[in-house]
Image (cartoon, rainbow, N blue to C red; front, side, top):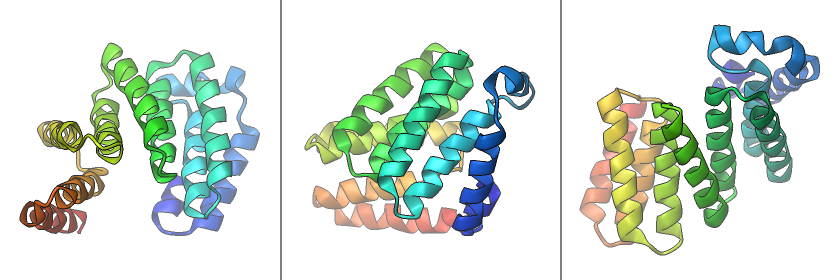
Length: 193
């Protein structure tokens, strides 16, 4: 489902995610988390939530991500739980819910830092920064977004980076720094090619 969604084939992606979830049995499949680094059933639910949101079903996306987070908490697999927390904050971000995004991103930050999951740390930091901006604290939000982007650059993480550059650009534009915003938007477009 993940590959199909990145190819823009959302109905097929949803079908594959839902089929994966239907066949998933946590008691039987936890071994795969040690092989692949993440629990496949939880990840299928997280991708399903993302696809549901893209298909215009925000309530279903929220229900699905909450269900995945519950399973992730029960499994006790740190990387899976960290990703689930990030996806939960991501769904709230998609729904334009800054307070909920802030809460989930802070939980993802604490958990990922406790467990050394750096990729989730920098991604959750980005959403945390966005939430601060949306809640009226542009100074904190911009500093947090910049910190997250610096962390991504240091780790050489390119996945999601153009999106987060766009969030920083939007924040800069909102504070009147249009030239800097334009630079960020241009960089985001360049990096996404």
